[in-house]
Image (cartoon, rainbow, N blue to C red; front, side, top):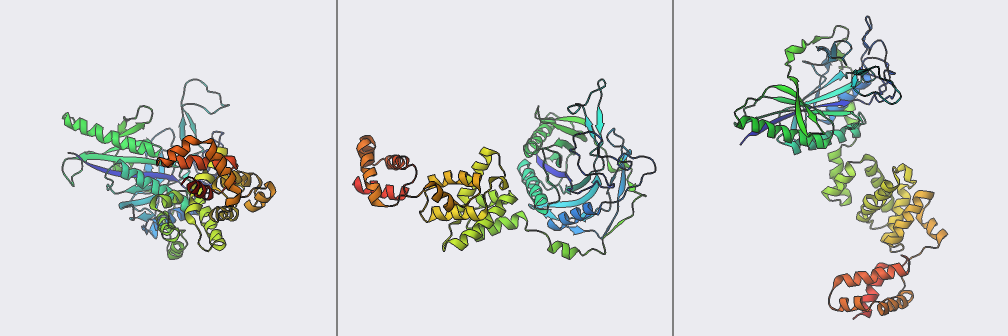
Length: 478
C-alpha cells in the first residue's frame, strides 16, 4: 500500500490593464503575434522594468481571501534559465521573500503566493493569415511579461479528487475577487502537480513534477496516471527519477520532459533593477474589509436565508452572475408575496431560464429578463394565476420583448382556467375518449391520472390549472 504525497503549484494570470513590468496591454490573446510588445518585455539592452501596482494589489487581496500573511516587505529575484520563450535569459520572480505567506483553502495549507512575469509562447502552428518560412518554432511575445500569481501548497493533497476540489475553489475565489478570469482552457490558470509515493507515512518518495495541465479533468487524470505509473515502477524494482513530466491529454499519459531542476540551478539573486516592495504604508485591514463575500460564505448564506440544499447553493455559488440574479429576484419576490416560494424561484432559474439561455446561446443580460419581471412570473405561478406550462412559453416571450409577464398575458389573452364549471365539460370529454386510461386508474395505476391531466392541459393549450384538473378527474372517477 503506497501513500501519495501531492503538492500543487498553480499559475494565474492577473487581470490587470498592463503587463507586470511595462505599459504594454495585458492581452496575450491578441491575434496578431508580437503586437503587444516593447523594449522592456523584449529585453532590449538598457530597458528598465517598473512594477505594476495593480498586480501587487491583486496578490494582496488573494492573500487576504486565503487567510494568509501579507509581507509588508518583499522583493523580486532573477530566476535564470535559458529557453527560447524567455527573452532576458532569466525570469523576474520572487524566491525567498514572497509577497504572501501561509494561509489555507479546503483544509490544504498554502506555502506562499508570489508574483512573477510570464514567458512568451512557442508556436508550432502559425495563426491564420501568417505564412511559415520553412519548418520552425515561432515565438509570440505577446505573453512575455504578463503578470502571474503563483500559488504553492504544502504537500497536503491526498488524492486527485482533493486536487480538483482545491483548484475549482481557487478559481471561484479569483473570479469573486475579480483578479483573474482563471479560464483554464484559455491559459489564464495553469496547474502543476508535484507527486511522490512512499510505503511509510511521513516519508516522502522521489518527487515528480507534472506540467501542462489545463483542465480540471486533466488535473484528475494526470495525478491518477502518475500515481499508478510510480506504483507500477516501484513494484518492478525500478527507481523513480526526479524529473519534470508533461501531461499528454490526447494519449492520457505523462511524458518525460527533462530532469527536475533544484533551486540552486536557477541561481536566484535579488533583481538589482527593482527596489523592494514596501507595503508598510498600505492599510491592509481596510483592504481586508473591502473583500467581497467569498464562495463558502455565500453557500452558507444561501442555505440559511433561502432554504437551499447544499447542491443548490453550490450551483448558484459557482456562477456569480446567476447567484446575483437569484438574490435580486428573491428580494423582489419577498416584496410581492407574504410567503415567497424561493424553491420555485430557484427551479425556474436553474432549469427554465438557464435552459432558455443555453438553447439560444444567451447570457443573463442577453435574455432581456429583469430580476423584477422574473420574480413576478414566479409569483403568478405560485398564486395559481399562471400554469407552469404557460410560464415556460411566457418566459420565451419575456426574453424577446423584455416586458412584464402580466402585460404579455393581457396582450396575448393568456389566462389560467381555474373554474371547475369551465373545466367540467372538458374533463367529461377526456374521460369518454380514454376508456383504457380510466380503467388503468381504477386498477390503481398512478400514471393513468397524470396521463389524463396531461390530456386536459393539451386540450386547454396549457391554460388549465393542473391542480384543478387533478381534483376533477379524481372526483369523477370515484
